[in-house]
Length: 141
Image 1 (cartoon, rainbow, N blue to C red):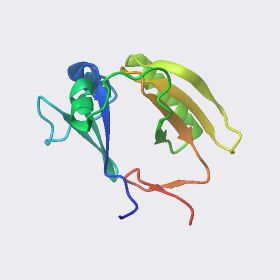
Image 2 (image 1 turned 60 degrees about the vertical axis):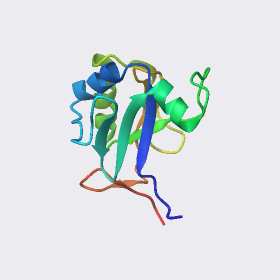
Image 3 (image 1 turned 135 degrees about the vertical axis):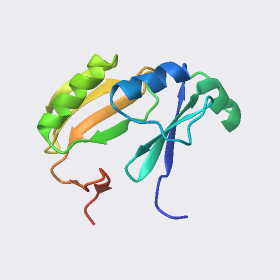
Image 4 (image 1 turned 90 degrees about the vertical axis):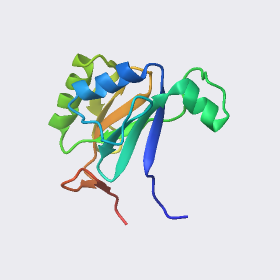
């Protein structure tokens, strides 16, 4: 198996509402999207939004989870200022700020928000990780 992640699919309560949230942030749907699923190109991988019940059915899993899912999604920023700008934009688009940005113990700066379906997103500036022009992250060897 190659070491990569191709698509992260979030099971959402309301596909139209969740799609509109990301579009308010300036994200553009891929032409691969249709009335049943939304795709967004995100650098070297993609984010997919799919109705939660349909995703659970496809995976043969329970539809409802409770509490913290044990997973976060990270958006790495190019600067501390971008972290603050992104958190401001997501709040204006309807997200809930879980943790305002602050200096992190690992030497960076980060905060968290919850999207329309409660998924926790970290917005972080990490001086140890380089971002390419296309936004892809390059970890140290």
